[in-house]
Length: 369
Image (cartoon, rainbow, N blue to C red; front, side, top):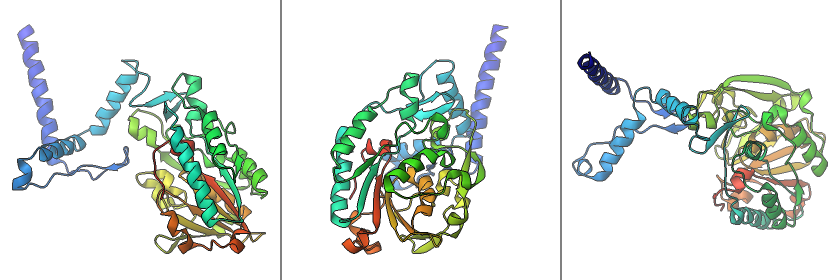
């Protein structure tokens, strides 16, 4: 009987390996991992020099791992076992608490926060003399989720202090404490557009501009939305429903993309089915956008220096201005700004300028130019 069990075990193992190996040979290679939001490695080119190099074997190994059959299923099984059976607190830094996924940050990068604030100050002095200057920090999900659930958290009070201390020419708008964990997507890092009324109220009070309340917008649902943490962790979690808001202002607004010299809608719904459904908001990663509001009741302009958190917020700010200019310093050299807008003192006299980068980006390592 023991001999028969051993034979069955060996035969089963060989059969499984053979089937998976055959499947990897016969099945077409995938090009993109939508769960991980990255391109998959392709079969490396065979040349006389590359075959005998260590680099070729590394590239081939990467290809075999990326194209392994049922790869996503095995990733999900691995993640579930690590959190369930082995009782780990996280999967590669991503944790699940209060029904929401997030990635913890342990250490405050004080020097980078100070660097960002100093860069904002110099940029404002160079191009926006005479404008009304503001700075705000969209809190990441960890600000409301990590510490209450026993996970490492940076000192957000210290982050705010460093930013305020190093941006003396700007009015600080405090956005911390306005949102709860349910105001963020459970599978993603970003806040929900439909829950941003407290943020709008804070900005309205500081900027002195009235915005259409969220309650006056029409909600549109997009499902399923699998956020960045769902793909990175591979945990078996329920997708979110992404909601975007429209009204007569967003419908009438025209958006000009300086990179492509083309017009685009406020919401590019065709991007929802791509690698990142959040790209629906203002087309995702864009260096320089100009949004004109033909229904505006004033002639003022708002300039926002933002990251992806601003993609979903900016559409809600259109109602308060004749023009909203949206700039992402990760994708544009600041020296190019005068090529796309008038930076004279006369133009700046009619401008509000808001530097609004999320706490996670300020605590990172990105270098602006």
